[in-house]
Amino acid sequence: MSVAAPRVGFSTDDAPDPATIATCVHCGLCLNECPTYRVLRLEMDSPRGRIQLTKAVSDGHMSLTSPTFLKHTFRCLDCRACETACPSGVKYGEIIEDVRAQTVQAGLLPKARRIADLVLRHVFTRPQALRLLGQGLRLYQRSGLQWLVRRSRLLHALAPPLARLDEMSPPMSASFLQASDLRFVPAEGERRYRVAFLTGCIMSLSLADAHRASLRVLARAGCDVHIPEHQQCCGALHVHGGARETARDLARRNIDAFAADAYDAIIVNSAGCGSTLKEYGHLLAGDPVYGDRARAFVAKVRDFSEFLAEIEAPAGSAAVEREVIYQDACHLVHAQGISQQPRDLIGAIPGVTLVETANPTICCGAAGLYSATDTEVSLQILDEKLDAIEATGARTIVSGNPGCILHLRTGARRRGLDLQVMHLAEFLDSANAAE
Ligand code: SF4
Ligand code: SF4
Image (cartoon, rainbow, N blue to C red; front, side, top):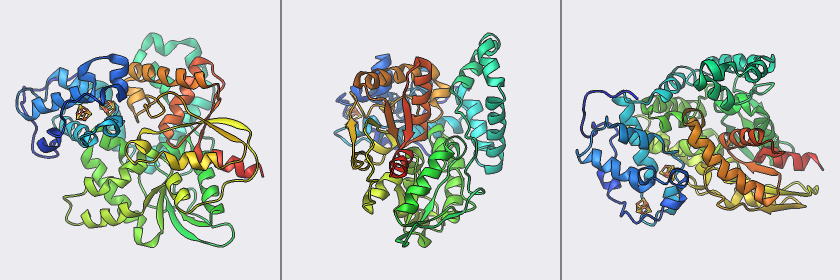
């Protein structure tokens, strides 16, 4: 970890608000809901501990460059389970994201995150560059080279961090679905709604079939679906990683691309992206040109499940005799307050039995790039989740977030479990296809 010259306190741009920090009354009710505290059992890896560390820096009692401060703040998943648990309404997400923006401004990113930061700034901001990266990864994965590298354990011997990255890298789809691949899907039957669809970054390359299923489900529900040409990555990974200015740039470009007035809703089928799009108003609050436009944009953003529930889209009528676990994505349940809508959509399919795991709203450990940058802790958290899933006996897991789906699939592969992990859209689509 790089340690610059001693620097006490935060700088003025994007500093955590002392008034927000002061809303924490140290009750500790969030501790057992915090995934890192549950596996590490350290106060400094709890929400309360991290808020105390932030207060110490804010008050000038600790340096922003303190290795202790950096270590524990970057171990946070930004899952926001602590916000749901907190009776005082502490806006923890704002605090931790401000802290990370400060560390990036000061050039204090931990080593493991520096490469990710470069890729986020220079590749995720250019859809064509992202596509090239996806094509390279797909060639590596499908040519047999990845199989050979894993079997030989060459990377484990030569470069263990690269071996971890290889293990956590998402499998690429056979065919991508970015805005340049498809621009419009007409409603089936009478058009009831005109909506815009976000393709995002990782999902368009790694879960393109979930995108296709989403488009089919929306079209069946009477939506003309437009996929605006100049849309960008939403900037969620940038906000979580502290690259606040890059996120703002992406937000402005998306606001221009989506022209929110033209649509009944802007549909997002990724929890992390939806939560960030809904926070564009906060991200661009001080922007004299985009501040108002961001608020109008946010008013149109809907998670895929939220929109289907709102328009009372009919469920498939064919029976799907299966026990199904719905895995709450943190950025749906904690950041957007959405947990019942996807359960209702799944439960409306005849024959489905919804099964709940122990602690269903605890993170699976994916958390954007966390599984690649903090793999050990991420896998410990995943273990708790897989134990809870195994205990139910159900073998179909449905979720509304690409990170959760990919991480649970990785966990199932590592344990040799026969789990089917699907996006909600794929599950709803398959129920329709069974008719
Ligand atoms: S965001 Fe998640 S990992 Fe971070 S302190 Fe809150 S509960 Fe813990
Ligand atoms: S964040 Fe909320 S729940 Fe956690 S210690 Fe502070 S006041 Fe209590």
